Length: 345
Ligand code: UT7
View (tube, rainbow, N blue to C red):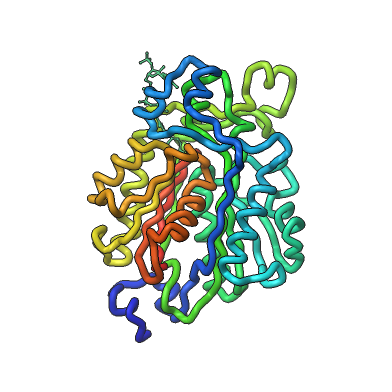
């Protein structure tokens, strides 16, 4: 390879080193619902204050989807915007992967509903469930299909309607989450830029720290499970916080080392937008400057699988990243799961 990137990365990831190809993100798009729920609004619902939420989380407001607006609808709008950005049509798309923990329904997959909405009838479609880490999991899966020459155009989406699984009587969790969707079009290219590497991890031993116990085969819906509020998410916030900082730091180090990159060479670091304090703690440990760090948690709260997808779109559209800039994405979520990726934009 005689590209500038091959000189920059002495130890490139074998998959594109061998093929001379990279999987590029050729378009991004996002969507957030119109309705804004502010911290002051929440003061009227639970025993909380704007001051507590802002100082402990960095969140000022979040978006809430309309009653008749579902994960697949938000995913579809984000996807159309990404397709327009990439200049691809529904006929070009060969695979749709939707990362979500709030599918429209347990089955069919939300990806199939998006396929129908888009009229992308050539595309295979499935969902990925890796909670807040879902978008990078989906990116990595999409990349594998591109690098193996199975598909040329893959649509990857993170979409959530978390407002439907949030317990609006629980002040520990209801202030944190919001709804939205983000999407990316993956395509193969000649090797000049793209997804350089990604790593994913999980620790099922800590699955109880963040979960929604009801609605699956273990606790199918009954009057009892509804009365026991098992259909809402539950979280041990303090433990999740500690694990999030450690896992996102380690995953970031792994992908930077693989690419032989120093953090100072990264133009834009886009972490999962769960809590400003988590973002700052990881940023500090990695040695990231405030100019490098992209955050929008104050506007949207934690949108789980949609979080970095929305942030990536905003960073690209706002001019925070430009062609050939290096970007670090890092995520963490229920499972526990985590992931990081380095992209040459
Ligand atoms: O997407 C990945 C998964 N999610 C996350 O990454 C979230 C990780 N965790 C966190 O972000 C933080 O742990 C929280 C924001 C959830 C909580 O912040 P914290 O600083 O860890 O607070 P805490 O849970 O230790 O609670 C401190 C106090 C408690 O009162 P006492 O026991 O000290 O009297 C809570 O009851 O704050 C109280 N509290 C609240 N007070 C006002 C908890 N929630 C609220 C609230 N308003 N909304």
